[in-house]
Image (cartoon, rainbow, N blue to C red; front, side, top):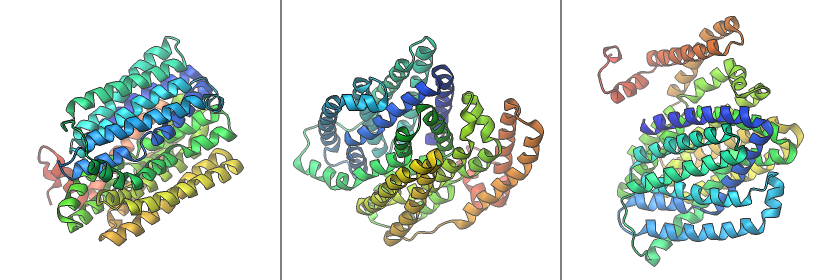
Length: 467
């Protein structure tokens, strides 16, 4: 819950900052900013190569070993190599990004890797509630600096400066809570990290492929202004998926510890079932709500952004599929089967790359959105298949079905009201609140499991939840 609420705060601060950036910078310059961050995300993979995932896994298993020290050494070396490569290739990079920003990219890479590493260590130490707070702190700091600098006339440079400031604040604050002491790592420490990282590195590529492969391919075929609209649609779709992501992040260290102590057990299968039951809790009504009022919400970002309405719907559905897939993959990683997730990720990356190039070339941003959705569906099927080979998988179809029924009831109530209020953004905002409230009310009536979950997590008793 702390992770989820933290992500809500993060999303709100990012939402406000994005509105300011899009309206102040315009579609073209904001699109340039997006392209640079997409390149950053990819080069960050080269600067990590599965190190943070390996550190999180090994530290979460036991207190033995100096995995933190070993991870710092390896990642520092990787960053140095990548930074040199970036500087050497700066003429080509600057041409692709359409801005002289390679040196900025090198600085962004340093702070991004540091922030990611610190959060991974905190997650491994079962301090997810602490690391979760770092995310909104980072995003809020970033947003404040970006808004102040951009409004003062700093342009894209102000947006980059805000990104650096936020990451530095997050990394410094997180480092304060890291409890593992530093010491000289042994050869075995490096070997244990390597045994996990040799498979987990592809997970980073797979995650980044899902998040921004379409953006990189779009940059070849369309203008930066089109990319800006696509990225906004993607950000809105991602907003609905934060609850499922919070479940993944929270359960990993718990399942990892359980599997290292007692092997694969029914308790792990139960945790996987719960994660599947609640992964779509917010994104299912989010998809329905997007279909009802998505065109109006997109107008907040400025003229022309409402053209991303249909792309928003496709990407939201892709996010839904990817969320379920993520629960399977996270469980496999946590039970120390990165070899199986490697297979899933390899297929996902290959299919996503091929489809993005072919479909984007033929159908533009609709093709990019379709490629992302198809890749997520294939990954979901593979995730279920391989998870079933390792543990007893129980898919809670009844609970998921009740969420769809509640979303359908919400649509039945909100749609007539939408036809009355028209294009008024303030009134549409009210409709969003009405729809959300009605969805959860119906779900409480339909699902005993949901009622029990809500009651168990409230700090007080609610008589209406009693049977």
